[in-house]
Image (tube, rainbow, N blue to C red; front, side, top):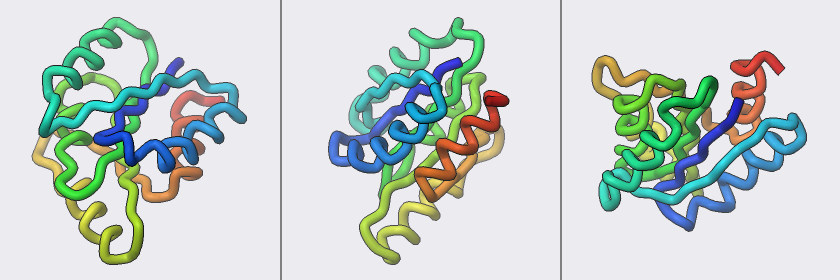
Amino acid sequence: MKVILILGSTSDEGHAQKITASLDEFGIAWDQHVASAHKQPRKVLEILDSNANEESIVYVTIAGRSNALSGFVAANSEFPTIGCPPFSDKVDMLVNIHSTLQMPSNTPVLTVLDPGNCALAIKRIFGK
């Protein structure tokens, strides 16, 4: 069991720490990468390919604005993908929610806004 966090930018690290702090409390292993689906799609695919043979993974994508990262990961992996978009205020939140929720068919992204709830959802997915 492992969580792979993929951040669209290094500026998302503070948001990721809110998730990983809880994962540490729950005793759930995690790795973190920074790779934008828009700017570094091959790097994202390398991350997915390097974990394709793992037994149990949950991907957490943290990207705002035009969130291609969540859909890109969900479309190119068989593991669950949780989008947990960062936001600085209510206007930013609305933009980021909409870009994370609007996914094409056959691209299942679960969206969780609160980082603590994201970690708790992972804990429950893993049955811990």
